[in-house]
Length: 128
Image (tube, rainbow, N blue to C red):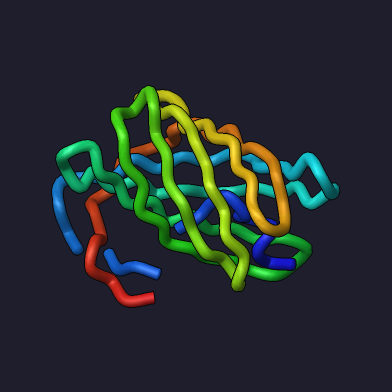
């Protein structure tokens, strides 16, 4: 059930200090089964239209945390992820103000709408 939470999301890597990360917060919802919740994503620009996203939150009292790499220019992001054994594809857009995406996969379909709340020192390289 945790997989739902971020179904799309998408994202087993590590995080190290770089310049700054954008922090986005908001909600995600599934369209094929009611499994909505709150979500935070810390996005790190890896350069060359490559990105790292750390998605986390709590769904029905259970914490979840997923790391995902994705690519593309900010107006045309795309990525894939395997979360709790299920495969997901997603697309989205990112601006200084928001990160929005749609996802679909083996278990769930849905979308997320996050607003940028702050910038922080990057933590790329941290173990999960």
